[in-house]
Length: 150
Image 1 (cartoon, rainbow, N blue to C red):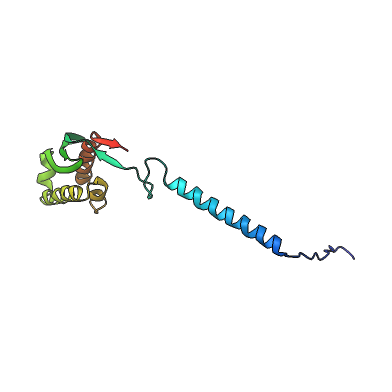
Image 2 (cartoon, helix red, strand yellow):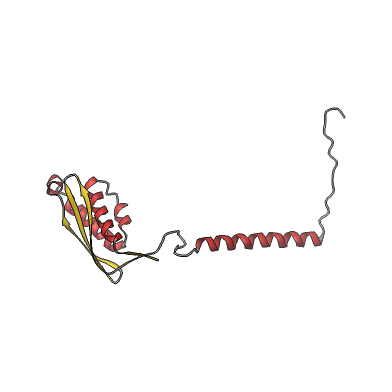
């Protein structure tokens, strides 16, 4: 043969014994993968979704977020490890005078945070203005002081 490769055919017999060995090996690999992913998901402190469980210490916490016009201060009350109340105790006056709807938008953030027990949910509600992001950060700063990671 010129320049070609000669491949000899090889006959592979699949016996009952070989078939059982392959089935057992396949079963062991599948069980191993299931165990690997199960152990990986259930690592200490992680939920199945990969998030860390957080608990809040009871008490009243103040979070401060600095702006160029002054501080935004939020007071967060935690009772029974849940957010019960959020008050804005300081806000630069020009933010309120420049945006008459800001009070309603801040109320929405506070309501969403208390309802969901999560500041991220309030932040994801489409509130993209500078002032609202500073309010969310002030609330988050207060909550960060009360967090117990488990």
